[in-house]
Structure formats: structure tokens, C-alpha cells
Amino acid sequence: MGIVYKCGMTSMDFERVADMLSQAYWSLGIKAGEMKKAAANSALVIGAFSEDGRQIAYGRVISDKTRFAYLTDFYVDVEFRQKGICRQMVKLVMDHPDLADVYQWLLVTGDAHGLYEKCGFKVISRPLDFMEIRNPRPKDR
Image (cartoon, rainbow, N blue to C red; front, side, top):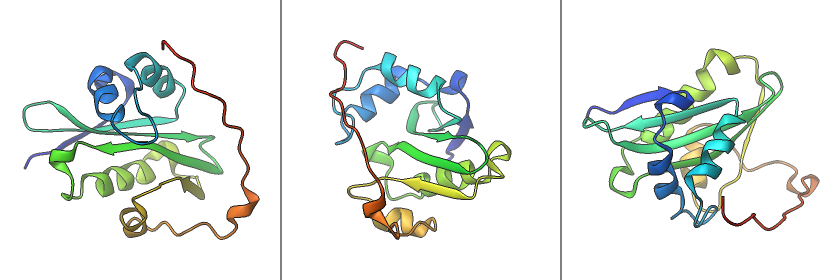
């Protein structure tokens, strides 16, 4: 299986990314325009592509590129799961030169703790310190 990994907006197929992520519990129904805007405002985006050039995975990093980075929207097409693709994508973004100085990496997952533990993540030591404001997602994006 010859998977190719690429970083950068111009490499991403945002229609395909939206198709994949619209099935994920955290982004049901998301549209390509919203994904493209989110990617444009991210520190780094990464995708994995099958031998035929089809995008099969996606992820992005929000960061100040110095102290903090947040992994989000990491998703692998169901057909390609359990092949180490997400772990490789996490490794590639964490090793990326633009993020070399980052010393605190965070993510939120409802169902992939085991996967991210294999990448070195641990359950956060002080979860009650985190707070959020969650507004409804605007429609028609």
C-alpha cells in the first residue's frame, strides 16, 4: 500500500475532506467551505493519499508555533483504518520544522484514546482546569 502524505492547503481535496468529516461525530454535516476556512486559519494541514491519488485521511494543527499545538479533525477513511495512517500523520506534524519548538500538544477525542496513547499522548492531568464556550455552528457554510 503506497500511501503518500502531503502538507499544505493546495494538496487538500476539501470536497473529499468534508465528505469524510461529515460522518464524524464531532463534525456531522460539515461543508467544504467551512473546512477550507478552518484549514486556512490553521498552522498546518496534512493529508494522506492512496496510490490512485484519492485523499483518504486529513488532519490539521492549530498552534502559535512556539508553546502550544492542538490536533484536530484527524480522520482516516473507514476503508483505510488500522494501517497506521493516523499515527504516521501525527508523527509527521509533530516532527514538522514549523512546529519544532512546540512543547505542549493537546487534542480531544471521544473514542480514540488508545490510538493517541500510541503516539505519546496521555489523559490530561488536570481536566477540570479546561473551560469552553460552545455556540451552535452557523448553518449554510
